[in-house]
Image (cartoon, rainbow, N blue to C red; front, side, top):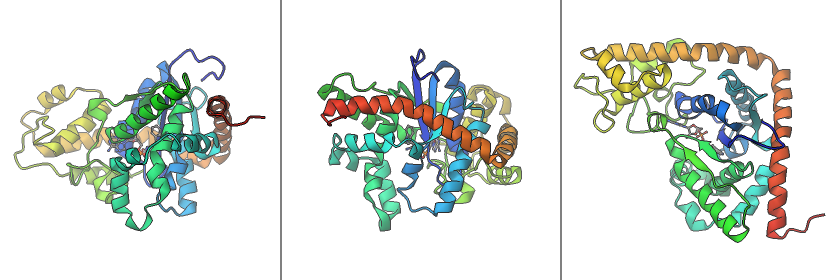
Length: 335
Ligand code: TYM
């Protein structure tokens, strides 16, 4: 990404280094990053500050931060072409978040379904960071004058708030931010839980319900074999009535590039066992080279640290420009 004049539109997206990175994160986010990267100037962030909104064991957070950076690269995202960095290494994120907090209403934040869910799940720790999480996310995006934000469907509401904040800010101080567009392709928007296909696949649910990218092939196959389907035994794409089967078809389609109609035609008359084996094969074969590259990279801490430092500097050069402009616009006295 060139820091001087950016010819291509800008993509920003982030993933929290909290727990395992799931097949949902991969299909809903990372895989789309790899498909979009050549047409955009991309920033892919390990959003470690966001991860602090839930209590973490410090050593785990540190390890998972480096693992996620390695995973981005192992998935094929080149850190020379893209900017792959850690949120806390660019303090402008937290600085802009404060400013945006002053332009975001309590009512807006209270309506965020993710806040309501997480507050219900972590009643002992409903902290202010959890509440203002979306303004930090808006800061992430707006700092880089982002055009497009590829995410899963669960982030749609946060994206809409980011747009509202940008528009509000621009109406007071014109030309401050590019108003970002979400990129949420329908078939990859929501990978569902294997044990309860009415819910999204999530790293905060029971282990059997999700595939982690770093699971062994045996675990991946076992979990897919046990995936909840239904009792009518017909392989048909029907999100409403057959969420489990539809979920497997979506996973298979995303990883093989075959359309779901072609897959259904291909699998017609077969049992769910065959669908599950085909899905397990596709997942295992797709993830195998990523896992091998990850295993290699994670041994090379020097390379990862140098890469993260260089990339944070590239990100900061852009972020600083936006922050300086914003400070000036709102009237902060600059030296
Ligand atoms: P996070 O870490 O929960 O998830 C990372 C990305 O994975 C997508 N995702 C899914 N997609 C499809 N099916 C699923 N089951 C599934 N589970 C997760 C998420 O939609 C997301 O795209 N707040 C964000 C991180 C963030 C961010 C940003 C994203 C912080 N700042 C700025 C974009 C731009 C989050 O918690 O994602």
